[in-house]
Image (cartoon, rainbow, N blue to C red; front, side, top):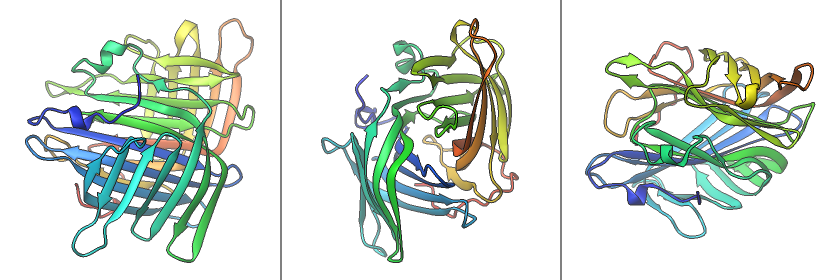
Length: 335
């Protein structure tokens, strides 16, 4: 499925959101960047874009979070998406994400990044027809579930981060509405296998006022093998989640099992509020892109479980309705 923006094909009377995003993390310390170009289109309204940038630094406490909203959106080749944001009180700023590059500015933060994909696209949903079906209402892929980043990110005029061989990923999601509750977990930088990566999304949706059980979709790459995790009808999924981290038991194909433990360092999580394309109260979203991750991987017929540990190479995101989670929410507008 070639990567391309979905919003230009959306029906005029439909609501849709869409985002292209990247994360990259330093190999030697808890320092990471998270950049997101988004589109929101309410029913009967034009599409509006936003530029997001967050810098996670374990040595400095709370993340630096910036967002510019209300911008124009375009798809200039070869970029997948480009945003021009700003208003009368601030000069317009631009950002774009596409194959091999991401460039932009958001407030006092500016970046120029190149990346090389180390793995082919991951389509989290196992069947092509699920990307055309009404459910799930959120669709997602990772055009590059494992990537190496180079370049620079400048904060104001006094601090520059040099990205040289930082591991990370490129993601793409879209839909008519967000899941009622979701988890996204991505992991790189494992001490035992530097080529391994994990990319999995879990969600619960509301049907007739009731929440469905969790459903997981994603994959683990280990020793060059891609092991699909979750899927409709998968048995043995276990989830225990909070803003401090989570424990997961993820069933995989051919009897594989992955147990994951995520820990979010104190005061290292960013908090945002995501609006719903069709209205509604929205979700609080807590994200930490320098979390620790431990995996225990059981592969039938291959002996004892394999352990994988990443001290700060995980991105953990929890989307929820509750407001009493204790993580400060950035005062961004909803557009």
